[in-house]
Image 1: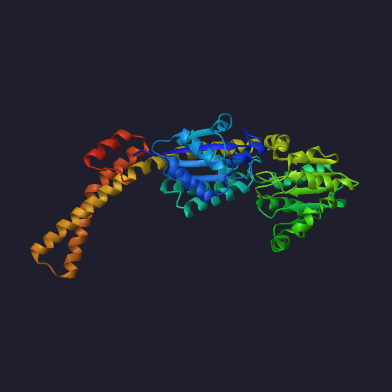
Image 2: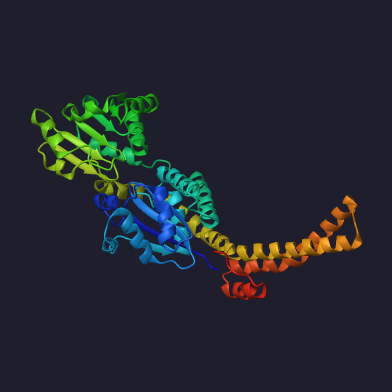
Amino acid sequence: MKQNIINARVTFRKSPIHVLEKFAFKDMPNACLTFKKNSSVSECVIIQTCNRIELFAASDNPNVDKIKSTWASLTGQEEGVFSDTLEVCENKDAYEHLLKLTSGLESLVVGEEQILGQIKESISVARHAKASGKRLNKLFDRSIRIGTRIRNSTGIGRGGISLGSMAVKLAEENVDDIKSKHVLLIGTGEAATMVAKSLKKRGYAFNVTSRTIERSMGFSQTLGGKPIKFEDVLSGFNNYEIIFVATTAPYFLVTFDRMKDAMKNKKSGAMILDLSNPRTVDEKVATIPGIKLMNIDQIAEMIDKNMKKRKDKVTTVENIISEEVPVIEATMKRLDAEPLVKDVFTNANSMRIKELQKALQMLGETDEKRIKIIDELTKAVVESIVSAPMNNLRRASEQGSPELLEIASKLFNYKKKE
């Protein structure tokens, strides 16, 4: 009857981006449903960003080996790859981890806001696919509300550096006078949006491209940049000194051969910043003379500086989380009692209706007003008798008393419905 919440994750903290991308799922709804089918879990939500792939699942008997096996099967890997990369936690630790995610403490850039939107999207995808249920829905809804409140009350997200801002800052540190350079942004998704906002804020002109010119035009109307055709970009890398790549393409867009040809007649060098997951810039590009290639792994030093400046706010957030975790824990434990409570109320009401109908038949009662009064009376009687023990059962569940739940299940002849 007791359901556990398990979190299994691979993140930037233990895996560089070129390793992390191998754990990503191509079809999120299908992955959620596959975990439900093959990993002994009743509910599943997946959070997937360029810095993390995380699974949250509900199960009465969590099996990490089955989770590894399913994950490996979905991503075409051997199970052994998880030995040094997979982190796992359950229940209280999982609740704390999710709150750190929604408040921004676990982000590569502390306090960045993008992760909150990504978590909202993750639970929305799971709901739509019918992969999540009452436990994960409640856990995520509450964690999102708490994370939002924490951000508003502490200002943990104010003054922080987004992934896009960091990428632009890296370009500024490595390229002189960006305003005089030709800048290209490939992509129109979330990461590209952050880059565009940062470029626009600093007054840097840039070209933007995507799979379709219509998408590039729509993007540029909102976020700036000059839209250009995707086909022109692939044959015109030699026109740019700075290239930001932020796409979700499952293959290399910026290939070794394309960049080698581009550099043949190019007088100046080029800096490429790959923010994609999986990577869309071939690592071999970095071996071409005149090219500097950077990715998320290389901004760790800037993250450390950002953390030091925000130490006081981090402490405040941690204190709030430590107060909220026990509340969430009690709420989740209470859910263990709900199937039994619902079953008891349903059975009691069924017996009430059955006996009420017999009594009305014996009395020959046909007056609708009187029937309604008698019906409400029997409802009140059943409610008053059943409510007190059921509320006590809920409280016992909140306090972590599975023994009482087992006894109550036997007393009320409750059998878990699969």
